[in-house]
Figure (cartoon, helix red, strand yellow):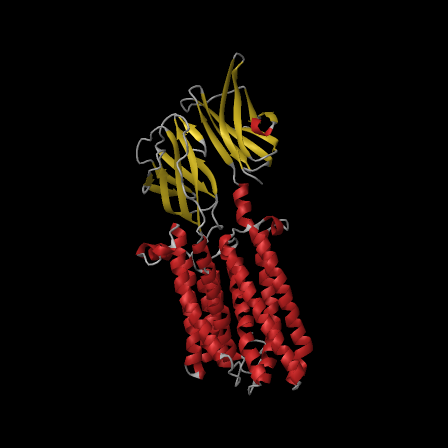
Length: 542
């Protein structure tokens, strides 16, 4: 921006100073704690969901697709009595939970809620039985739509503050010149964003703990929110919004660097947490989010001041239009490149645009963006030049088009806020690629069976066999038999091979449907001794 000098209001000294501030802020974004993948998914449990155990286990374990931090772990006994589980250990992607005491016979529910690396809470539950199954205790997992609606509304208002407020402050400082129309609207957007940032922070804590709106003022809610990556987003957003206000209220001499730093803060706030910033490789995704956010703020923020200046025929409105029209072309180019890169990383496969909620929201956003780009092209190539020449009709048409652009921008912000509740296809693919496993333990033999990937379709099975007391078992043959009588599928019987690494493998296996299968291992110990052991194993949908 500084090198090409797209409009004359950029002073060389101010440009260098502001550019240095932006570079520092971008480095701070890259230095934020790295998130591993995004939107954690449960890939393995011990005991397995639906398992029937002979005796009470000493501990439970939950393995996720990425490292997580537990928020709430609860054991619900067969009589419906809940007990909080507070003794646990983190081992990379696994949460090891101590059993608080001997469990009675019947069906128990282990309910869990964790925070993933992208700052989003996820939760679920698994059932297991001691001795014999009983009626499962009731565990409420109903969606709190009032909380979800509040989170969505606060997110939209925060976007209004960042994109229209901070972006508008930048436009008034760098582009408007003497045309200061729309300043009250920009201030209102900034104040709206400040309030929404604080409210969003509290709502993050409620969502993390699965608590109702009535607990909004509870101190533990705010402490929980402070422990998530979203806290960085709120902190940077508050600084960015404050810089936008200072650029409007302070001396004109420092308005430009403050406004530019505020604009950079928009990109930094978005890059600090969320699906896209948590994706790998972060050396690419964080800068792309930074540029995408700052570019949207540049474009959306200029619309209201420019439209009002043209409508009122304010002094300096034509130079304002000229500066904006020259600067918006490279900004849109950067926006498009960053958006395409992020979309490819998040979606991965074109089919995911149809098959996932995230993809469908992205399609809606893309359609709105195409309409926005079409309006921008119409404004630039049909209305801008006549309006600059004083054509009143072209000027009025341009104002109407800018109003329509503003409405489309608001719709895009509403769609983008919906991504808060939809894991990206990339995260779903990571979870789907994880194996499922079963541990089979009998007096005669034991086995660890792992099927990769753990969903229906072509898979590979890996088997480790041992004696009942964990000793080596030198079997002559091992055969895997998978059956699912409730689906009318004949048992799949496949001999395993021994590649030489101590495991047995079954390659070229195709599991046709998802659901609970029975896995049986026929282990030929000698010519006269065959051991058969079996256990349920859950295959996910592809």
